[in-house]
Length: 227
Image 1 (cartoon, rainbow, N blue to C red):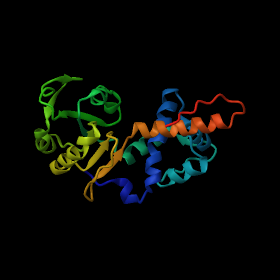
Image 2 (cartoon, rainbow, N blue to C red):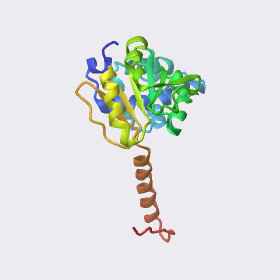
Image 3 (tube, one colour):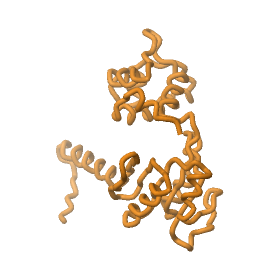
Image 4 (spheres, helix red, strand yellow):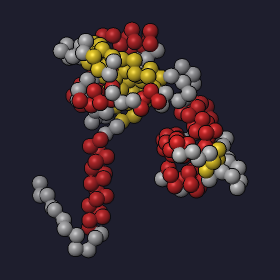
């Protein structure tokens, strides 16, 4: 696995976190047949300020052309390369409950540089079941997957109670990048990167904003829930 180009360039984590949004916006523009875009237009499509976008893209060495803007396809390639999406990243999904099933069937992985090579679970009743063209394997196969498939990323879709043990198994097998859907904080050694996707937290944040909007509306009908 090659070194992270973002780390070599010293790109701030906050900038890296916004690059996928720029790429999403550029992909949408390309699908509409748009070949060039100004920083203001791209910033609006990505939901950021244009000054922040220009600063972020300057880390990639992409400054655009005055009066023309950015070439959509070229900028999309630059960002894809910086994010490592021009490579093929083997992924394993652990936990074949409802969420695991949905993730296994998600076609967006393949179109974004990620190849799901394995589905894993600890439940003997699920071993051998076929989901989205792959058979569910036991966790004992992890070392083989890392050695033979070059497994790079582990996706944890288990309940919170078992997530840490699964994380420990992934790390012990040599996986150094983990996407965690379980509602818990994982403890990992130095050198292992974890990204957390907490759907309940995101919903709670939306609820907060909905409440603020309701409170700001004179005469709005409010439902108060008393614990």
